[in-house]
Length: 609
Image 1 (tube, rainbow, N blue to C red):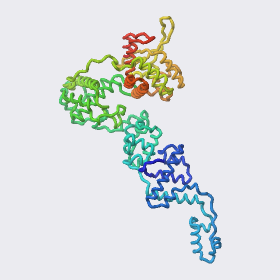
Image 2: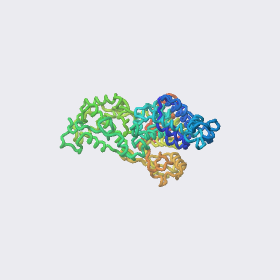
Image 3: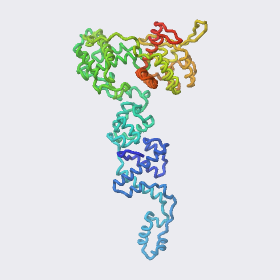
Image 4: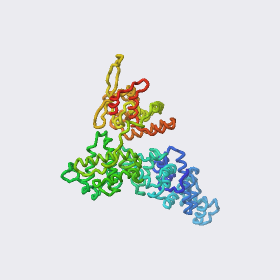
């Protein structure tokens, strides 16, 4: 086994080898002591690991100036016979060697010289233990001595290469997880799927690493939180809430604590208390009231998209005002607003992080990086609205963002963010040729429904089979046909009905049938079933589709579909997102296409909501 020269012997190695010498089951020993090395069914790994342990035992004995012990631990007891050897009695030995006239003490000394491994009293019994048993006994004694001298306990600053499977350790190191403390911190910050950004480490290897870290908690003091030991959906909200303590630092809105001297209770631009229509006593409570007023229609299991977007802008301003500007929000002036926009254009690195980091994680950051001019204008518009609300409610006297450059007129819907018909046809062809797995069919279904209906991603994620309604119509030729409508709850809780192509419903029926469900979207038992859910999952009827997870799956499919396109088209498709499909729907149905007439503007407006 190729191992790092810094890899250390732990007590589990000694326990495993002692069990082998005593004839215990190898697989059971492996699962108990060395599961982190790999699966016991992988004979190559097991044999290589045993050989490496023997080599390390011998090297350790050499370092302790015990060459005899080094040779002993390399011996394989299987080479020696288990048959017992009959020894001559002391009297027989004396007659054979002509020592009958010597004293018994002298005879015994000669006997011991002739049979040094016989042991005390063997000359009386006349039986010598099997050589294999003698070797095993001496090896066990050697291992006890070695363990007391060379076995070590892991420490937080130790390299992962010192304790973990070499191949796994190398992959962790390449991902920046070089020490046990760094690894534990990453797991606690990322949760049960901590292994996703580590190439070559999957769920099985990750589970072995976690089990080893838990077993070594007494030595390392590195504790893995309960939130990191189960899939995210199985972790109670209260457990996640304890993952990061509240404080005055770069923390999300719900964790951020404003110091009393900066909470705005005595803000420079606070209106007289008698004029205030809010019960808020400080800036945090006043902004919370604004967020509640902007709540919108909540999605299943979370906040509405509107409230999340507004909260993001409010928490960024709150963090900047308190941590950077050292002023209450109710003391911000026009000069502060200009400085804040400049900050958004060039934020410090410590304020930035990947979008996918969860709000409960210590890796969460308020920004992804410098904001584009368009994003800056959006932020200024939202904040202008926030301060306008606070002034209207008699909480503030001043709107520092009122003088900021207003946002330019909105460009045409979907401008430069649509797929051409050729690009969509290419994408549709790639979807048809994709692998026939449940996950692949599910993401393809999402793309087809988004393009065909023009729904927002949050709307399609919330769509259930019970929202699909069948109706009959008579076409221009007098033929009775079946049509389908999807009832959608859009922004502002406004509802609308969007037509669904019959082929999409037929495909939905096929997928239900494939998974042992009644192949009819109108079946009452399917009323709560998500259109884009897992039809094979036991909890499919209760688990909503995650908007962020759906967006990532769609993005992956778009990126993959770009392969094989000309450079310009490939770049365009890789920039695309779920919202581009909504824009493409509007553009394509308005202009019509081969075999399909253009759809009236009023119908398109209704579809898009």
